[in-house]
Structure formats: structure tokens, C-alpha cells
Length: 114
Image (cartoon, rainbow, N blue to C red; front, side, top):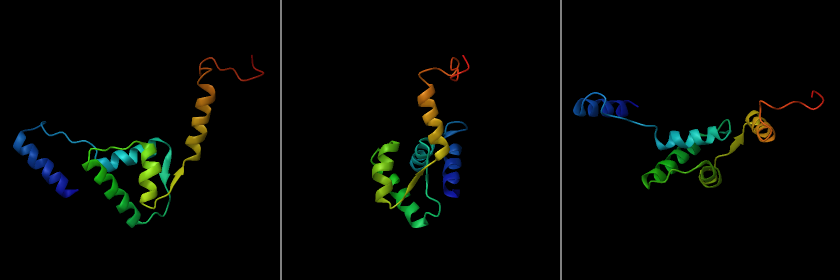
């Protein structure tokens, strides 16, 4: 973190204020894709497995590959010996959205209340 801040500040001194723009790294993007899909890493995952995941995602990013959630779940996670768990609350919300979306939230009237 300190090296990244140092290099960012050094570039800002060289280029001028407001000229240096940084975005989230490949590992953060991969983790956000997993979280946004409603999944999370199993509790108690070892540091070794997390380091494998980080190296794998960074290697993909070096080749300009930024995988979507399905690729991460089906290919990257098993190769790093990780296990993903689905968040039950988000799963239930997704099912409700699929059931109620065609009807529309504003027009939905529960059965027997018409």
C-alpha cells in the first residue's frame, strides 16, 4: 500500500495535480464480481489459497483478461482450491425479483386482496 501511494504521489508531482487517475485493480474487480453475484468465500479460507487466487487473477490481468463471475466461479476458484458459498438472503431476494418482476412491483396485489 505504501509503495502504491508513493508511486501515485510521485506521478502526481511529475504530471501535476489532478492528472493521475487510478482505478480498482484486477483482484478487487474480481472480488466485487463475486460479491455482486451474491457469493462469498468460505470462512476460514487459508492465506495460501487466497494468495493463489490473487496470483491467478493478476496473471489473467497481465494478458488483458478480466473474467466475469461465471469464469471466476467455474475456472479460477477450483484451480485455487477455494470454495464459494451463495448468500441465502440474496438468493431469496433474486427469486422474489424473478417472480414479481413480470407483474411489476407497483401493480402487484397479493391473492385475496383484490
